[in-house]
Amino acid sequence: MRVAPAEAVAQGRRIIAAIFRDHGLRIALLFFGLLVPLWVFVELADEVHELEAFYFDEPLLWGANGMAAPVLDRSAVAVSAIGYQYGVVPLDILVVLALLYARRWREASFAAVGFLGSALLNLGTKQFFQRDRPSLWESIAPETTFSFPSGHAMGTMTLAMVAILLAWPTRWRWPALVVAGLLVAAVGASRVYLGVHYPSDILGGWAAGMAWVAGIYLVLYGVHRRPWHPLPHRGSADRLR
Figure 1 (cartoon, helix red, strand yellow):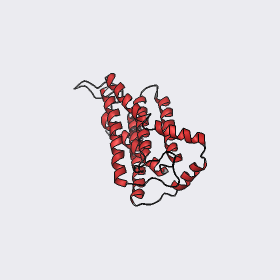
Figure 2 (tube, rainbow, N blue to C red):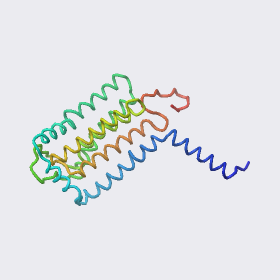
Figure 3 (cartoon, rainbow, N blue to C red):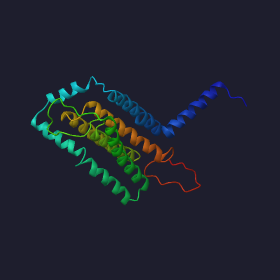
């Protein structure tokens, strides 16, 4: 039976609307959480590999240094420490242990692979690019490792993405988004203020962390599953609403 053109168009619209209604979050995550950050990271990495300077790096560093004050010095050092050894790393461990204790095996696997993989990926990329730290002035919190991508930025973005994606199916999605966003921004700004990272290092860390966690989420949760929902019984329809 031949379908009228108007009816065919209406049917196509309904199908497309149903696809975006059922899988809109994953499509958005694939595009904005994986593909766009990967593109940003590749663009940054190519310039770093070619030893090209970013036009915005030094002006932003000097701008941050121009705001130097004792209270900001102390705040930046404290926030920077929260972004790694005294905040993010303990929180990573606590999140995984809490999920294991609650027997949320898939969620614990997602968090553990996200955190551990991010750390290993950061170490590997630092050794590959071997970008020197900024040396525009003597930092009050000097670092000796390589610069690109920022481990603090990548670690905080990884934690933020894990928290947001786990919280998204719950009523805690917006508080998680706000708190995670503030943490990511504050730690990134502190690293630039301290003069231990170029802003392009921060962008690279954010992009790599976001892409890594988005990829792990799409692999572990596939098309129909989402956090906190039980796995379907073998042989049943693998479709969770």
